[in-house]
Every structure is written in structure tokens, then in C-alpha cells.
Length: 251
Image (cartoon, rainbow, N blue to C red; front, side):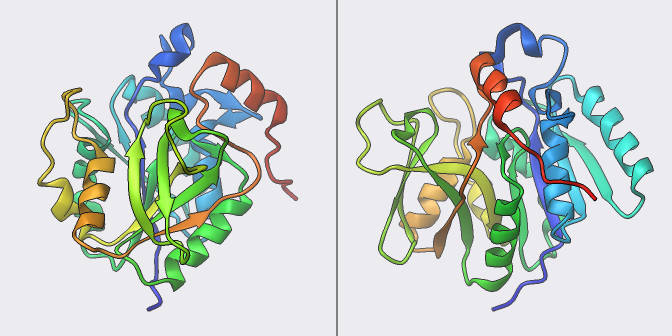
């Protein structure tokens, strides 16, 4: 079933505590790599694939993102950027809830973390898959040595997700697939988000909603992403990204 996907939600409410002093006065999605904020690379890659109506969920030092969005839209009036505030920083599941009305009437939409950096070609592959495949949830995955820093993703032979383990203990995973932080879904996702209970960390966890969808036999599939990928989680990661990441050439 083909879907006309034109909207996206980017979660950009967190601070990025592991980055220390780098995020004391600037939210992590606004940290610059290759001449523009992390968030800017994501917005550009989505817009290049006809996803130009984007809601950005803000929280920590939200005014920096609000101001950037206003400047970005002035530079390109064909782009629509809507910011919405997460009143309580209560996890990634909680961050999605303010965007419910934004996507409620859509056949499908893209969403993801607003601070993940990866090669722009991956957005073309992902949006093509999101428009063409049948699913309740589609998630991107990248191959790593050990997915202990993110989420270990277990697949069957047809790229269906069988299990998702958030931040497994180092060395405990028997998969090399990591949750890469870019998703596509139908509004059915919000049925599961609405039922979330606070985790031991006191947060509403998006991976818990995904795990429940898998348990209920929803169609949860994966698309692999290739080339450069970074969650830019630490000062060392940021330095590496600034050295290694090459944005697409602009004519």
C-alpha cells in the first residue's frame, strides 16, 4: 500500500547531558557540524525527499530552536516548520504526545531524534521504503560492533523486528543491529504511547511502546542505513563528526 508521506516529527527537547559544558547554553540539536546545526542536516535531508511539513518538539533552551526555525523558513518559504513544546521532559514517548494532532489525519508520517547525524542518502532510501511498504511501524537500523549505547534490534529473515532491547549491558547482545533513530508510523502508534507508564527512570519510553506493538503482532519492520552514522552523544563523538561528516554537495 503506497502512502503519501509529507509530514515528519523531530524530537529535539533534550539537553544532551553527556556532552557536558557544550550544552550548557545550547541544546544538543543546535550544535554545529559541517556549517549548520545537527537539526538542520535532518531538516534538509527530509525536505529533499518531499517531507517539508515538519513539527519539532522542543524543551531544553527551546528559544534557540524557535529562532533557528524562524530563520530557516524565512530563507525557504516552501518549508513549514512548526515548533511545539514538551512541557515536562518525561522521555521520548512523552515527547511524541504533543505531536498527535499534527499527524492524526495522516496515512503515515516520519519521526525521529533531532540530533542524529547520518549520510543524507539514507533519508532517500528510508522515505522510499516508508511510502512503499506495508507496516504499522518502520524503524531504521545501523550495524555496530555492540549496540549497548543505543537499542539492540533483533530481526527475522524478512527484516521484521522480533525484539528491541534498550541499552543492553555491554557484550550481552547477540545482534549487531542498532536502533538508528529514524522511524515511520501510522497514527496507531499513539494508541500505544497513551498507555505508557513511567519507567524506573520516571520516563515514558518510546521503545516500550514499540515492544508492546511487537508483542501485539503489529507489523514492525526495519530498513538498514549505511555509511556515516552518529548519535553525537559525547564530546569525542562531536569532534569525530566534525572531522568525518561530509554533507551532500550543493549546486
